[in-house]
Amino acid sequence: MLPNWGDPDRSSIPALQHFHKHLGLKKMPKNELKILLVLAGIQFLIFIDFELIMPLGTYIGPNLGVNASQLGELVSAYTLAGMLGGFIYSHVADRWEKRATLSWLMAGLALGTLFCGLGHSYFELLAARALAGLMAGPASANLVAIVSDVVPEERRGQGMGIVMSGYTVASVLGIPMAVYLANLDGWRPPFIGVALLAAAVILMAHAILPRIERPQPRPEQLNLKSSLRPLYLQIPVLLAWAGTALLMLGDFAFVPFLPTYITANLGLPKADLGLIYGAGGLTTLFTFLVAGRLVDRFGSFLVYGISSACAMAVLYVFFFAAPTPATLIFGIGCMVALFLFNAPRIMAAMTLFSKSVSPEQRGEFFSLQTVIQNGAVGAGSLLGAHIISGAPGEKILGMSHLLLQNWTAVIIALVLIWYLEVAVKGMKI
Image 1 (tube, rainbow, N blue to C red):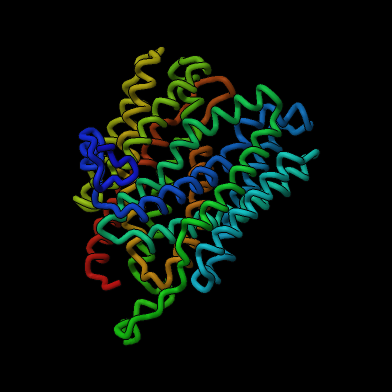
Image 2 (image 1 turned 180 degrees about the horizontal axis):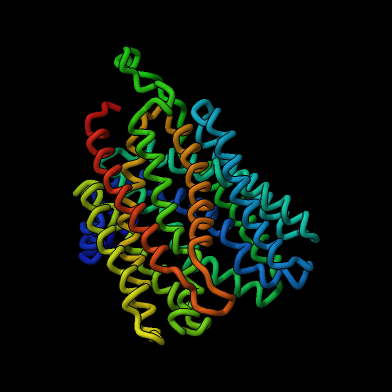
């Protein structure tokens, strides 16, 4: 009898049974898994579309006469447009059917990315990046809302983990492949390739994703304790948004400066950065999935607390106990450990945040969360940039202050997550 390769619930292969048992895939319906894999593909496209301009900037600059400052503006245009798109979309997010909306948003993102590949001046690239960002912000919010609609709370962590793995694939495979193509035939093919891939994923999403209409309020929601009050009047929602801002403020206190710190402070060559980040990225391919199962089993507060304490310890070693000059093994070990503990922390928080709002308001909630997230990323990076000092090519000074910014945000977020988890358990959504 041939093994059943397609059904994870009835696989006759012992290794697969063991794998499914530990990741929890045995409990997930096949249809649900298929939907999540499509959403992971969309997450991959959104992330790689955002990241693409940075590694390709060294190719674009000489070709189009774009200087370093203008490259920074191209990155900012995408983020600011994402904030604007998320804010505009929040007003209609819960009125429109989610599958069709996601398809149109991804079509706009594909068009903006295609225009990037066809652009012949800085201003054409700026307009194209703004268009892509304008679509990417709402698309990201819509995607998380669909996960929350499709996956029940008891499996929400696992579902989020599968979708978040799209980030990892983009980091480990997508970006290196884009750079490889740029080395072969210039910077245009990666943009055009991502646009064509997005078109294919849109067709797949339309075929596999279910129609998700706005849920109708239940009778018990029509009383004075209705959960359909404005979002800014709901304590769990405000806690979730505050937690989102703190996560971004904490992480982006140091994330933008890590490459410079590794090369200038630790003395590792730039050629080793690919190995160091690649090893960390590969770690998340497994940790996101396992972290989702841990959150479903033990709750967000416990997973967030333990993983945060471990991540803080790793950062202390990385910043204050590193040998000088550091070895490649040390750099890889610290990055793997940081990614290993950071994934459960993010997964615990984001899974809990998805439970803080009623189904009828998820679209608006996640759209505004995208606005807050993008704003906090910019604020965290800006604050970190003003805290540190050091001339180009020299050691970064003030790393202890960056660590203090990170630790403060992480600890305050821990208190919020504890309070939010208690509040969510008392909600009847």
